[in-house]
Amino acid sequence: MRGDCEDLVADCRLRAATDLFAHRWDPVVLAALRLGPRRRGELRVAIGGLSDKVLTETLRRLRANGLIERQAYPQAPPRVEYRLTALGESLAAGPLRALADWVTEHGDDLLAAQEAAERVAE
Image (cartoon, rainbow, N blue to C red; front, side, top):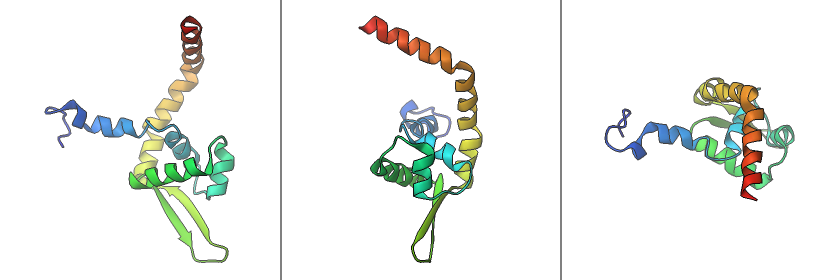
């Protein structure tokens, strides 16, 4: 795969990067982990609105992309924590932070446009 996208735009690294935002909960879990390591239950409480199944799928996907790591501690009862990797931290502190800043500034306009489009569609 070429980094400059000269052959096929579909093979571009940009597509791989935008896939990170294609799943609804991925950015949310990354943002929650930016505050530090957390256990599954802590993540579910902090985030709210997602099922255990969706959280499991999201954590697996983020691990497969090298953005988070899972640390199991040998104790009874078992304890597992999730934390950002250096790659995940760079995404959360860079593009994800920029997106959060953008939505803070323009979120009301975005929601107003979506509501207006829904009214027209009705």
